[in-house]
Amino acid sequence: MSQTVRVESFDVVVLGAGGAGMMCALRAAGRGRGVALVDHAAKAGGKLVLSGGGRCNFTNRTVSAENFVSKNPHFCRSALSRFAPADFIALLERRGIAYHERRHGRLFCDASARQIVDMLESDCRGAGARFFLAHEIGSVERRGGGFVVGTDRAEFFAASVVVATGGLSFPKFGATGKGLEIAEGFGLKVVPTAPGLDGFVFGAEDRGRWDGFSGIALDAAVTTNGISFREDLLFTHVGFSGPAALQASLHWNPGDAVRVDFVPALSRPELQEWFAGRKGGKAELKNQMAALVPKRLAERFCDLYLPNLTDLGNLPRKSLDEFCARLKAWPFVPAGTNGYAKAEVTRGGVDTDELSSKTMEARKVPGLYFIGEVVDVTGWLGGFNYQWAWASGAAAGDAV
Picture 1: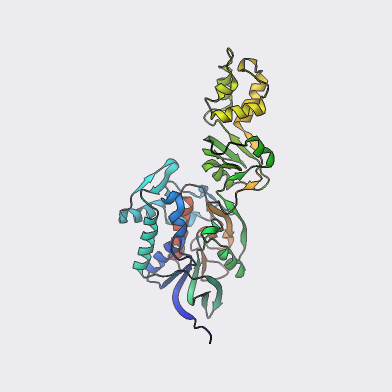
Picture 2: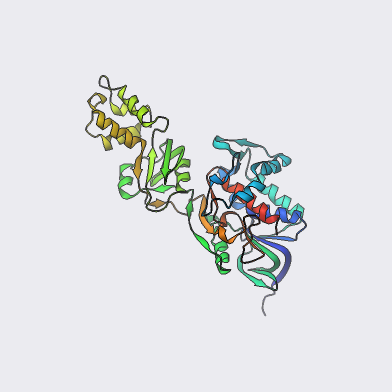
């Protein structure tokens, strides 16, 4: 005897109960729409709970289109202008959720990211949205002027479907390419994906140069393709991580060179002058340089690029200039990045040319929407990706 399939009917089915999906459901249900939130996970907001060291960097004080990477850099402007950081902050303040600001305008919960998940989930339920968790999403098809979504436990009929399934990063927490598969199934273009906000991996030669440096951190500026980020840089056992490297990775493509400024507080002429002013006596370059960078980095850099020098007094001006130039712009070509297992986000996704920037609806498939990380809009580190989740979710929720 065949198993009976439960059939559910709604105005809107939202696929994915993460930040973008819950924001969309909240706005749509608040307009009186019948909304189902369907997710393969057993709990809503799984990635939110883990983000920001468990405190969720939920937005940034200053958000603009310039903080995002996309084939169409202007696409995100409309949604971001209509749901700003202040709008999400107002939701937290209404609930009495305490938060604080860190460097570069980044906002975090004082206590736990769980507070944001609980807020969104309870607000969705309060507005009438229904959660269907632990449902493995199978097919999404057109039928009878609407859509039918098949899962391993039920079929859902709706006039509209919103895809908020996220990207490919953190597969161990359930990330899949389901949203991209749905888009391609309906004939929509997808911009090739890549790990984003991810650490760089050295080639064999550079890994040998920096062997044993894992754990060393310093203030640095990392540049690729003419775009620079100055923040903390961390040596790992395979390459570079830390905010400066993660930010730069968004603008890096395989084969591109990356340059690291290990002394961003001084210009190149200032650095040359700093060393020149310490050339008297028998001052060792390594010891002088250790006032600017971690001692082990100073020692290794000197061993690599001035191996026969004993003291600053014996350093010719030309050699000093070349040494400073290398210290201010140390070049390397990454072998790659760490991959989706460690990447914060997924770069690429559903091509924005396929979507309305006002509503997030697919132009060729009325009633089908894509929001959040599944779209080719990727923010810098610092709360920008969550602001995109809130803004794109609100845009679709106000339209479905």
